[in-house]
Length: 139
Image (tube, rainbow, N blue to C red; front, top):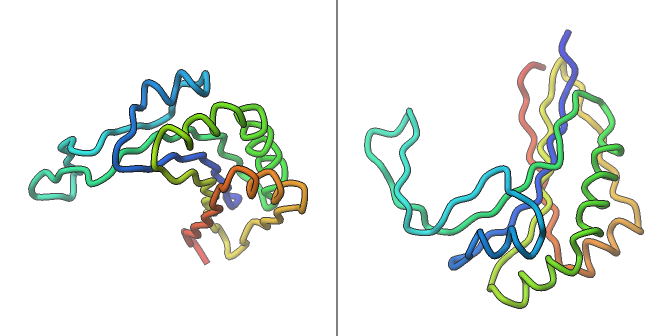
């Protein structure tokens, strides 16, 4: 039996972003990035498409667990340590900062997600949206 999983990413999304500048402000190399206007094509797509927005994304981690609290703590620590850089990014660009939590369900067991008041304060102070996606791999 495989355990359910939790992945957390911090994403910055906007029309016009300089991903190199964002990396400099945060002192971190992104896990994934792209720029509005770039062409891309997935294996399932018959023709290429043009990206309609820019993205800078850092994966905080992936854990096979039924409790997301350890990974959430890591994400909040990352955000707290990068508070000045994230504020600079928000000032420079018209963008949205998101903490994305992806839950992968195995054997019908959904990992718990609890955002504590002190964590909410940090996220709210930086106007960070929390997005929770759930994927059922086996029920």
